[in-house]
Image (cartoon, rainbow, N blue to C red):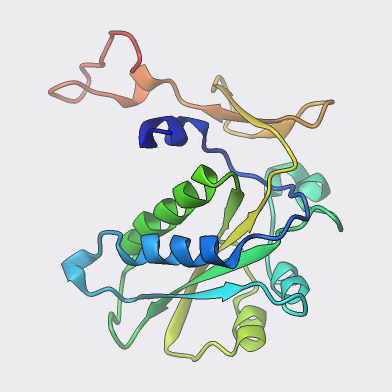
Length: 200
C-alpha cells in the first residue's frame, strides 16, 4: 500500500485483540524510528521494547487513556496492548529539546505497524516515575512517550469537525474522530488564501 494511503487509513486504536505482536515487527519499528530525521543529526532517542508478560500489566498501569471517553476510553482486560515501545531522550546527547525528533520517529513506527496490520496508540499521559522504576530507566534519560501496539479490535473513522474536537464512540462502538477540513488548514502562496480546489 502506498504511504499516502496508509496515512489516510491511520487512526489511533484503544482496543486490541490479544494476538501476539511479532518481535521482528517491533524491531523493524525501532529501526524505522532510528532512521527518522533528527535535529543537527544528534540522534538522542533510544527505545525500550516491552513484550514480557510480567511487565505488560505494569506498563499499562503507568499509562493514561482517552480522557474524552472517561472509563470507556481505557482498554479493559482482554483488550489491552500486547507490546509497548517506550521513547526516551538521552539527555547526555541532547540536554534540551529533541521533541521534534520524537514526533518524526513515532510516526515512522506507527506507519510500519499499520502496514503490517497492527494498531497503535501514542500515549503522552504517563506515570513516568512508575515507568522509570519498572523498566530501570536511568535518570539522565527523559521519558517522552509510550507507543502501545496490538492487533486492532475496534474501528475508528474520521468525520468533519463542526463545533468540537472531542472524539467519541457511538452505540455500536465505532470510534469517531473529528478532523478540521482540508480547506481550513491549507493556505496557498500566502496566508489567508485558502486552497479551494478538490481535496487530494
